[in-house]
Length: 131
Image 1 (cartoon, helix red, strand yellow):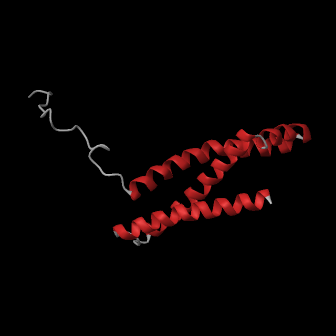
Image 2: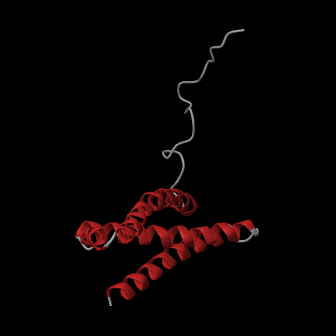
Image 3: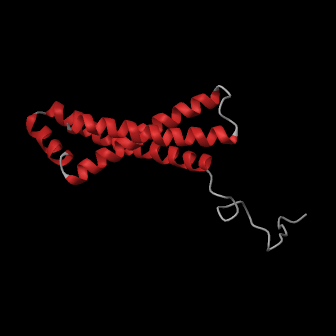
């Protein structure tokens, strides 16, 4: 018995994006994983805020200087979007755990609701912060 396998060269090794059509469930799943990573990294900024507040006014002013800069605000905005997307999509996953929203039309509608909820919650948060 030999360990070599014979394969048809025309046959793909595994499914890939050239075969599958881009779909809402695929998009929401990929974004859920990406926002989870972004939240893990962005939480370091929250830790920096708490640590600098504990270290005194000078350290905290360094943090607020960075957080008030364009880069800092963009990072905080991105973290807010990631937080709300991950929250809304997590609620959708919990709904799936109750065996609801599995029909394709419902899955698409729930995906659009996740995007709408993310946008609305992000706008409300930043509106309340900036006003």
